[in-house]
Image (tube, rainbow, N blue to C red; front, side, top):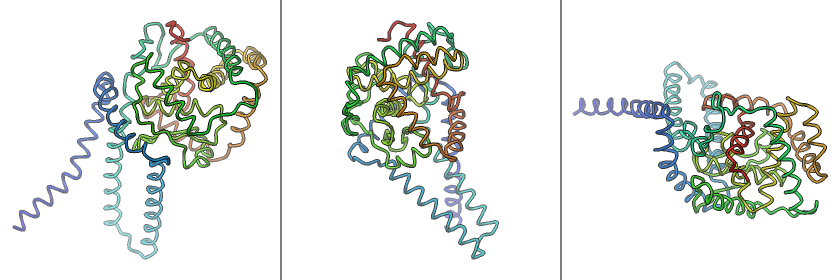
Length: 375
């Protein structure tokens, strides 16, 4: 009887390692085949995972994901304190360190499994380029779209014109921006409207878009929003200027429907906004696109970029000043460190440009314009 119990115990101990290692290996091998990730995971299995998550988290007005983060942070903090107490009490030895190290490694394996199964595999999908057949009219190098300086200038010129006109639709400087709940409803409806043009932008009937409970911390770290892969919630930093929040919200919602790449999420947000009848959403997307594209033009043709800024209407210039003051007001010594860490995270997940992948929106828009499908 004792031998049987010992054998069962050893088998159970082996399985505690074998199961997560095999699952990690399966996920890693599967991720090497973008077609199958796109076909079996992103457009099928993930849609059910995402819908299930949002069915649960859409019930509450507050962020469940942020609460989970707070609990995890507290647990980690307590564990660190306990570890130092044990050191002080001289209870730490080689056997203790070995046991804790193995436990930590096993925890990391399960974090990897949960993250990539619940959302992370979307980093390895074929994505928007395949869905819109953008490669038919554009050149790609390392998954980045190549475009000329003239194409960039044409884009900035057109966007500046649209930006001014859309700002006029909002009226004068006394425009009343919607509150958070109203804004999230409008972005949710925009996805439903865009679905008539892009069937793969299907969002479903359970919006889980939440103000971040950590907006002050998020602002300090330099983030506009983030996606909670465990809870499926789109988190928005509500400290942002009101005219910029709609685009950030649409971007985080793009993550909810399976676009993990930052550049693709930005492009999806742009497409949803521009196919919406809501001028605030269009203005917010155009504001970001102009800033990104003109900054790139600034490096190629300084005077053209300056003239583009001077040509903007007073109301747009006022918003640019507001946004610039917001960015400058949040600068600190911690943000560059966090950006460096996030840059490495993006590079480890198929985004060779790292933090600069956000700027690849310009290439996506130029490629889409070539197809003659833009408004």
